Length: 76
Figure 1 (tube, helix red, strand yellow):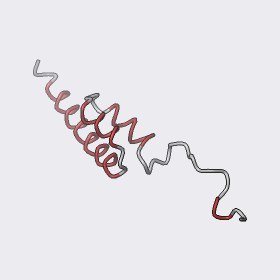
Figure 2 (figure 1 turned 90 degrees about the vertical axis):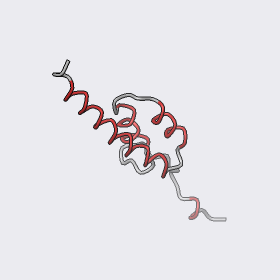
Figure 3 (figure 1 turned 90 degrees about the horizontal axis):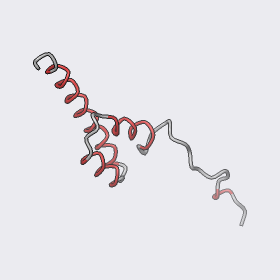
């Protein structure tokens, strides 16, 4: 039983750090559903990693949804 204690403590710290970082990004990005999901669901950091990589507002890895042309340069 005591041999697993360091492993459990490491996972708890890992989860707490990732959860805090992901919740901070979700709150700053006004993504309330992600915030609630990460606050309620405990996945040992897996959901938080998915959010931080693909869904946070300033993620470099998410797909760009910008239009092909700039609407401000269109002629009237």
